[in-house]
Length: 302
Image 1: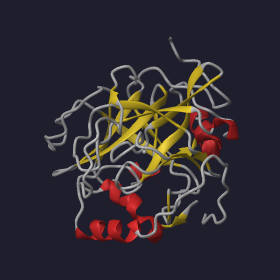
Image 2: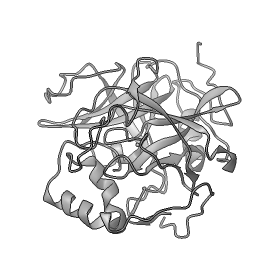
Image 3: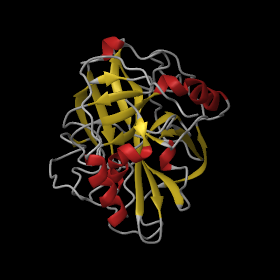
Image 4: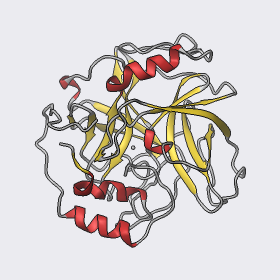
């Protein structure tokens, strides 16, 4: 169920410095991940803070991430290939990253609701980044509900912590599939800084991106939302078709030809009383969704 922005402000509060007493380990509930080199850090570097997101290499020069990670960013944006970074030094250039040259946001991106509609973007860099990941171009299936879903990102290990910058992963499961999102509803889910990171299902024996982290409740323990890749497949395929960086346009369980072998949950390092008030208000608005059904969005601001 998608609610107006004011009614689910708790999701945005996952971006703010911690307000909830939460200390669980990993992405939430996972472990440090050194084995997914094509899941990368998407870093906005400012003079006094970092804006941390995650992303996936889908062509040698292109990274798939969340639109809200790039839509209002005025600082320099870059891509990090290491599995861990010390983001304690906010000095621009202090981290070993690759500058982003340009970015494109999916048509229909809408911030008036949470999770945001079409919360998908692709950023381009000059150097070749590495092996592209396969992504799913067909429609999401109700049979996915209850299936293992592996999520990866550079976000917080708990809502109370500020420790973005290390790639972590965990296997959770698909709780629900709405018209626009894949939903997680347990304590293994994204937190601040995981925005833009991938959710993988095993399709036809291949670990395949089916969603991009978009939103989470402020406690990082209740509900997480991954935007469905298939809703923006024309945009994604169009960007890849126009790039000289290689990659393969999306279809069900695509394996790129160049292959050789989830707040919004962006952590911006800033916050204050307004965010806390939003959290307190939205706690009164949380609704319990029924388990195991495909839901349709009844309103769709475009």
